Length: 82
Image (tube, rainbow, N blue to C red; front, side, top):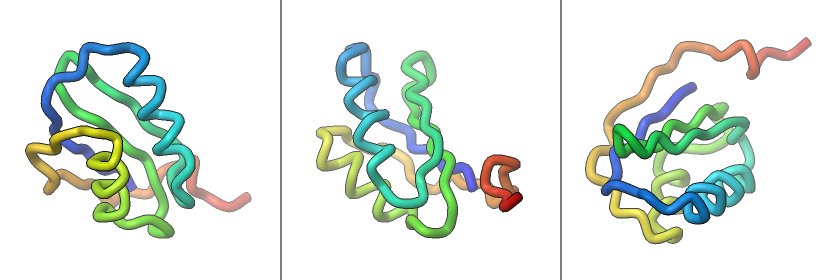
């Protein structure tokens, strides 16, 4: 699944790296991207982690999430078992 969280603008590269590292600690998250130009965080994850758990993690990192209702349930090639 892919979840997109609209956030207040983030311009700090150190904050971006810290965010990606912390999101990677959540069981089920296998990819994340901070799109500073569009003020959003895109998280690729399995159903092992809920959008609410990701949201809680983002808030604990100091992000003010503006919109949280963007999600696509299309399976990712990275989530397939071989």
